Length: 558
Image (cartoon, rainbow, N blue to C red):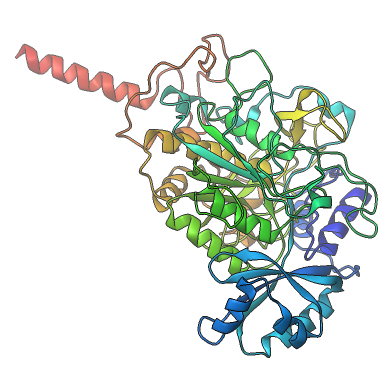
């Protein structure tokens, strides 16, 4: 239980700096239904702990459109003297954000209380529409540390659902129609990516990390989105923060979306034919909101000052990251710009075990994804709330599960994908087991990429409608079926096959290349019965086609 308390302690400490790494999950005892419900309620309420106050070192300011015109002009010239005098703090302009917002850096870190007082002084000038804190974002994943977790559990999250294991995507039937099109670009805004033998070369990405210590690659922003590692020593990320190994988080996400198929190496991705656009915003100790704001716009082809134009705009964006708090106005503005370009943003609800979504999942125009386990129960780490769109496989233990140990019990398996064997700096290509809402997001993004491969003109609203209409209900007795959680877990569990088949007018795909084809011996698509709605050896569509042919033949004989 100590590891769970520690996990939540660091999550609460980070009301600005979010600790998203979920430590080991303790074993639940033998619980009856009453005790199980109490166990769940503990998971969705944060304890009130006395914590160290977070610090702020950067602000996002937006001058008023009319009253702040002169201030906007000054800030555009990198001149912050007026605001420095008004706040009695030395402020320096870092860069422009969007059309009217600007990122300012403080000469020294302030506590959250001090920063709020500073923001109030700035607002009193009457020339600022908004003053916001540049929050740190962190990866929404958890990696089991026990060596016993290293064994290959199989990519259960793709399989057809069964009564015993209802949490899979029901993916194999979707591969009958498409493996993903190279015309669909998927931006993974994360820790960057490692070149991996089980990934095709990625599109030219960009490293948006503006803090040199955080970037961990000896420089700030540059055109290299390769992940150098995000390891940190004890205390690097705040007083009392633990030492951490490199997560290779972005590579794990990339593998779930687009790992190569049938090359006899590691696992496969959901949409191996699509192209990954790596965009780096997470480094040592996380990443800044302001960097994410720039990265979002750049990912869809909107020019960002000082950054080369992106010639490969993304159609769908994976955000397996987040920070506590309501959606920042500046972040919402960036998401609005992304949506206006026709791109689809998918984000993680968070790993705080609360009933409140983190940003960017709580922003408007975002597909918010919570996570469920192999048995269809919402993860005991997963945030859920009324803004949740859908649930997808995230692994780990369920909120109402009993006798569950992550990576050891059958109801606690994690998500297998790509990684690197290096504990700090990169070493050899490898694989990793992780669980969290990060993993759930990549399952949705891969599925949306398959849908866009068949119907490129799909809008975000159409995609959301299809996902909701085809979602499967949560199994009886799981946390999301409890009366107190109604409306908090989204439309249900993602069913990729059903969503893809709903695109009835999609053309048949060409035969896949040998490296992408599913061999006949593979077991991922073999099932003689599917009590949760998956197809057997002959599905309903095939029966309908045969019936139509039979009617046509009889008509011709008359």
